[in-house]
Amino acid sequence: MAVLLIIFGVLAVAGGIFGRDFRAADVIALREFRQKSSKWSARLVFFVVGLGLIGVGIKMLVGTD
Image 1 (cartoon, rainbow, N blue to C red):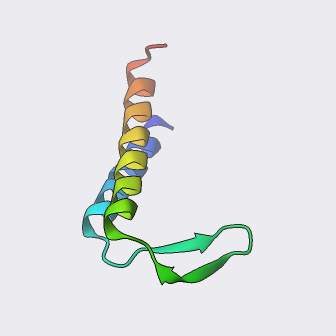
Image 2: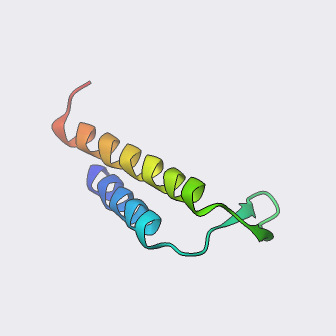
């Protein structure tokens, strides 16, 4: 499980770096909004989530509580 968290974290950071067009989505209705998101705010979300996943994965591998 920890390895999967690290892999998905790396993919999220890569998505933040290489992503060009970010759009908001309505998760409940499962449809895309027409308005684009700000690149910097979307990249910030990708970085924070990716680094969080990497951190939790490393913590699980090390085994500290």
